[in-house]
Image (cartoon, rainbow, N blue to C red; front, side):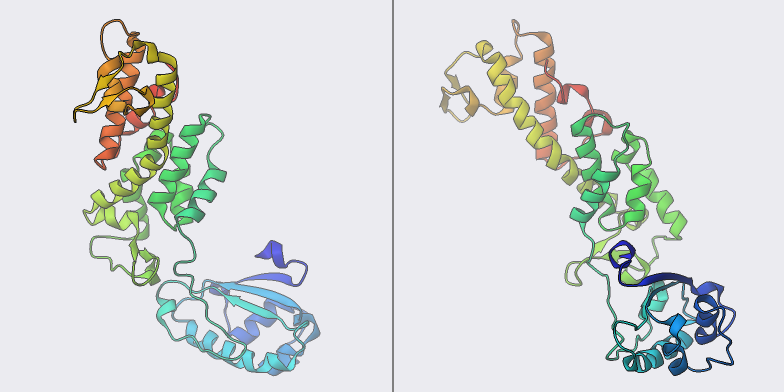
Length: 325
């Protein structure tokens, strides 16, 4: 936001927790240090002060005790600022979180509340994670697997996504310990309520999504494993299919066609054989041993994911999934 608006506004960041006075005098000290409080004693005089105009003021760290004073100030400001040309009007963006969000936010012509519930989803997190994957992860499929896993586990929480991306690859793909630590750092327990205001829930009101860290400490780790499975299925099932076709092209000579399947069908085209059929027909004496090992592993990966069971990191990262025999 700061980068996009820098040509329109002078950006000023304000930490409200540092205030030792009311909003009016505090903002005057922060933004117009050369102006005396005796010269500007009201909101109307503040908006007319030249050195105050033409800014975008980002205000954060307003706690619930401060909010009544800030709420009254913003209501008064929204009324007073309409007397200033919009090109010179200073705009406030006030970031509220936690308990403060549950308090009443005044709605005025020049004062609007925007809730960011449901604004970030797994697609946003996937793009973010893919851009942040450590350079040490060289394998393309490993990078995709890491980004998908981080997106599915973090859902909307970019802070959790950053922490997962900082872990060794195997730990990021099996993040139970990291999730419990994240919950501990937030003070979340099994008794913590699931509500958007404290960050434990996001997404549409009719389809709320519970934070993975809270699920972990509430004994619902199976739901977290489903998210890990979804990430693995998105990357590894297409990969198994790609490997299946590659094996048919390279090692079709070891197949004795036509082949009769378990349901009594005769298959003449080897590309119509699933990885299970390939495993059964290629895993026999006379076939290269590395081929037999790889086709078994592909079958096991497919079977486990088909039953919605996530793989352990060593299985998901095994080099035989990503290299030719």
